[in-house]
Amino acid sequence: MSSYQADIVIVGGGIAGLWTLARLRGLGYQAILLEAETLGCQQTGASQGIIHGGTKYALTGKLTHSAQSIQKMPQRWKDCLNGQGEIDLSAAKKLSDHQYLWSNKNIASRLTGFFASKVMSSRMKHLSAKDFSAPFSHPDFAGDLYQLDEPVLDIQSVIESIRQQFEAFIFQYQVTDIQPWVDGYKIETNTQDISIRAQKLILTAGSGNEKLLNSLNFQQPQMQRRPLYMPILKAKSSYLPMLYAHCLGASALPKMTITSYPLATDEIVWYLGGEIAEKGVSRSLDEQIKAAKQELKKLMPWMDFSHCQWSALAIDRAEPKMLDASRPIEPAVFKENNVITAWPVKLAMTPIMVDKIIAHLEAMSDESDDSRENTIVNNLPPAQTTKVRTTRLPWQKVEHWL
Ligand SMILES: Cc1cc2nc3c(=O)[nH]c(=O)nc-3n(C[C@H](O)[C@H](O)[C@H](O)COP(=O)(O)OP(=O)(O)OC[C@H]3O[C@@H](n4cnc5c(N)ncnc54)[C@H](O)[C@@H]3O)c2cc1C
Figure (cartoon, rainbow, N blue to C red):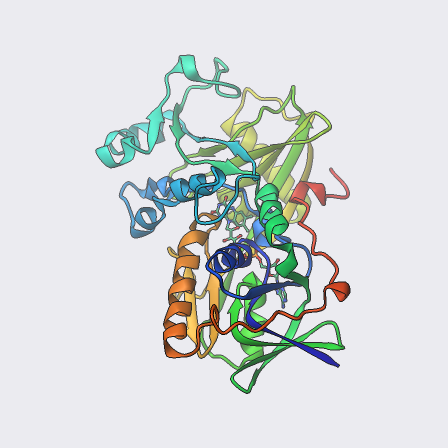
């Protein structure tokens, strides 16, 4: 068996691992990343690509702590997209500069005062009918429409742009076991004849963190999964307009969050999150499609969805365990010995998560040799490592549309 060594090994190539790799490499750390399948193949590729600024979380009528911590995220991501941020995402594509928030009259009147408040009016603009575009420009739309200054990204292009810059440090291995070794860790992979040794480990494997923590015999941190069942529909662009919008219901959770994606076939995909995806987890595929059709018909009765083809994606959100199984409000980063475990909780909050990882690494460097100065050559064998590809998106993986 050949063994190879690296200073810092990051396990998992979703947005958490990729952003961490890009920042650490930028700061001079000798980090490499191991990914089991394709980059972004789990939560990141399945996400709706919305870079929230917290408005969605403020919908209960008051600004919560989570809404405040996420407020600066759109600007941090925009700086990266402009090539002037902490990592370079200038090759990534923005799908939209803003999203809409719409509601029927009853809900809107309840929240009008709140939306007009100083703290919220800087985040959103109330649109008048002359500014409505499809599907809201229809005479039958009777609700209120707000424009939120929160971008939506083509997440595949985000992953691909990081992959291209750092592919020399990204390797295709599934980590199957981790054991303490001298002053670091021995990492076993699905490739029997290779073992990798690392001084420091960063676990950003999403739901895969659970098994890795078990193999290390760590009791903490613990993880929770919150499942979603995301309906997907597509039709020619003459039937479905491009749309990025939250429909507001009576609760803090949007009734439906619609994001869309253009296909080369002149078709548009709508990808549905929010309440429909949370409540749909106990439904069969047929039941979930039926529920999505009914809900869309209720929300947009003037639209014709009869030309659409349908599917749905079941996916778990992986997060730190909350005592009441509720949604965590901040990215979670834990350190035990030389192992850092992290979940961003939201794509948008990844920059904050990586700030916390770097703070831990700096503290660890103060205690021991700095992995930036005491460089061990990353002598992983390039010939044996196939290049890790970027994931396809959920609708690109659908085999049978219904
Ligand atoms: C349907 C959905 C929609 C969402 N929409 C949004 C949104 O619009 N905006 C937002 O801010 N957030 C959104 N989120 C949340 C966001 O997607 C996640 O918080 C974020 O993508 C988590 O990234 P991650 O890198 O931690 O995990 P993942 O993306 O799950 O990545 C983990 C990676 O680790 C790899 N891995 C696992 N085990 C191993 C192993 N043993 N060895 C090697 N590799 C391993 C996996 O293959 C995977 O590539 C959404 C989540 C879901 C599920």
